[in-house]
Structure formats: C-alpha cells, structure tokens
Length: 423
Image (cartoon, rainbow, N blue to C red; front, side):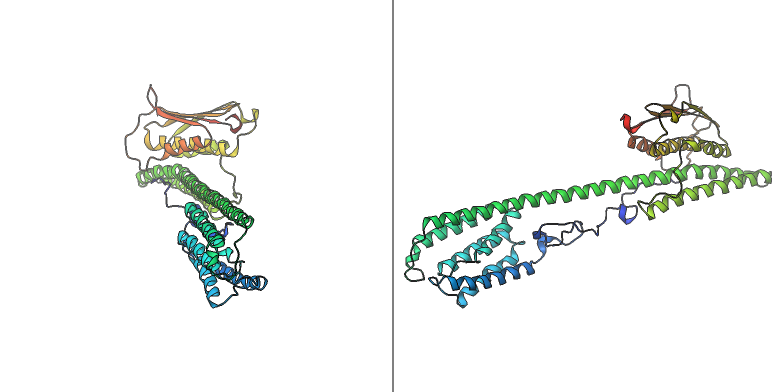
C-alpha cells in the first residue's frame, strides 16, 4: 500500500494556515480594519480619506472660531484658508511619505503663523504629521521637523515680527515659548509611545501567525499519521488475502471464499475508521462519534494478523488500573504503535510468528514487539513512513521508540510512553 504522507500543502482550508476571516483590533494607522490576515491589502498603501477630511473640517471650522477671539491677529482670508487646506491635504500622504508630510506640515504651519493669522487648530496638522512619522519608524525626521518648527516660531515671535503682519505686533513672552516647547515635547513623546505600542502589536500579530502555522503543521502530521495507521494494517491484510484468494481460486474455492470474507471484513473496518477521521475533519472541535481505539482492542489486531498468516502471542504485565487507566492519547498511541509494528512484520518479515509484550508501570507503559525474521528484502510497497510515524507519536507524548535487528536475528520494536504527570 502506498502510505500517506504529511504534505505541506495538504489538509482542509482551516488547517492550511490560509487567510483568516477574523478581524483583530488594531491601531488607527493600520487603516481602521485591524486585518490580521497575510493576504490583505498593505495598510501603508491605503489613502486615509475619512480621517483627513475630518481633520480638514475641524481645522477650518476651529480656526474660524479662533479668529473671532483674536482680534489682534490677521483675519482669515482666502490665502489663509488655502494654507490650512494645503496643510491638511498633505496628511493624505502620511502613510506613504511620512517624512515629507512631517516637514511639509511644519512648513505650512510656520508660513500660516508668519503671515499673522490666528493661533488655533492649525497645530493639529503638525501633530498628526509628526505622529505619523514617529509611529512609522522615522523618528529623526519627526524630531527634526518639530525642532525646525520651534526654531522658526522663535525667529518669527522674537525677531521677524517687526516686519511681518499684523502691524504693531509685540514679541511673544518667554513663558509662552516654554509652554509651546513643553507641548511639542509632549506630542513627540506620545508619538514615541504610539510607536512602541505599534511594534508590540506587530510582534503579537507575527506570533499569532507563527502559532497558527505551527498548529496547522501539527494537525497535518496528525492527520497523516492517523490515516496511515488506519489504512496500512487493513490494506496489508487485504493484500495478503487477495494473493491467497487468487492462488486458491481454482484449486480450493472454499479457502478462496474464506480469503474474500476476510478481505470484506478488513475493508469494512478500514472504511469505518477512515470515515471517523474524515468526520472529525469536517466538524473540527466536535467530539468523535466512536471512541478512539486503545490497547483493549489488541485481540482484534491478533485476529487480523492471523487472517494474514501471522501468529501473534500477546503478554500483558501489570494493569493500568493500578495507577489509573491510560489517558486516551497514550492509549491510542500505544495501539497504533503495536498495529504498525505488526503491519511491518506482515509486509517485511519472513517470520510467521510475533510476540507483543505490554508492561503497565507506575510511570507509564512499555511496549515490545518481536519477530524472528529474517527480513524478506522484497519491496512491499509504501513510502517507509511507518517507523517515522511511530517515533512522532511517541515524541508527542514525551516517549521514545527504538527499532532495529536483534543480535540473535529478527527485529524488535520497543516503545516507552510516560504518563504526562511524570514528565
């Protein structure tokens, strides 16, 4: 039988780590959608139309109200409103060109104040421009733009005011300059805090994606192991019995009929177990309709092996009841390890006798499967993932698998599966 492999691209859509439809909350500079998927549109390529429009309306309306209370400043005219709109319009590019926007908003704000227009919401454009530059990683540009603006304001308020409107203006007080400097530092500091929070959000998103990819890989491997273990044993029995039936079809029809009956029973059991695995895939998270197999089904394995011409002697030492029954995951892994070991004997060994020893211990369970050999050396089909699957099952439980030829001939598979609380 051609054994199933865990394919990197296989599995249902929920197990492939594909784009998720769940939206995660995110900061506003990601475009307001907080998309945690990898296949979404790049947030830096989106145009922030709505937020820019809101800032523009607020700046225009707020500056109009501010002008009524500052009669000693120049009243708003068409040129002033064009400057206000030009400054806010630059914010459309704050995600694509944050450095340009930081310097551009600082320059337009200086020109607006240098023309003698009233103080007010015009500072909001500078705040948003510097904030965008900091959170996108352009810290030097943001600090430089803020420093440039403050130096320009000092120049205008304490020297150039003599030649700039409004007429008869006086120099600004140094207390006012200290307040403005404090305000600028606070704005940039808040921007730095926003940058740190954004980096943390991005790290969290990357960790979620990596965790989802790991879960998808683990689920693919689990599905591959389960399908391999479900099919390999039954198909091996079917293969042997089909050969017997063909050989005896003419000379011993009754024996051929018995072989066909065995094939029918083995195929029915394989179909039932495959259906159980597929039902679990279709409704992930639901409880399985049938209990998972465990070591209590070893007599069924013995019967199936006998139908394939292999005599199996099972020896049990101790009892799981002494320390509590085996956990379901450990019980399933132990059953699959024995199943795969017997399947390999049927396919690869010339021996028609096998011995299975199950030792229940306080720390877990030990399993040993022996045959007397010799190896047939014939190609029995398959991809050789049987031993790898057994090792993966044991490793998932913190156990070990040893497999190899015995010194006196034959082959031995030995597994140790510890209980979870003992690891």
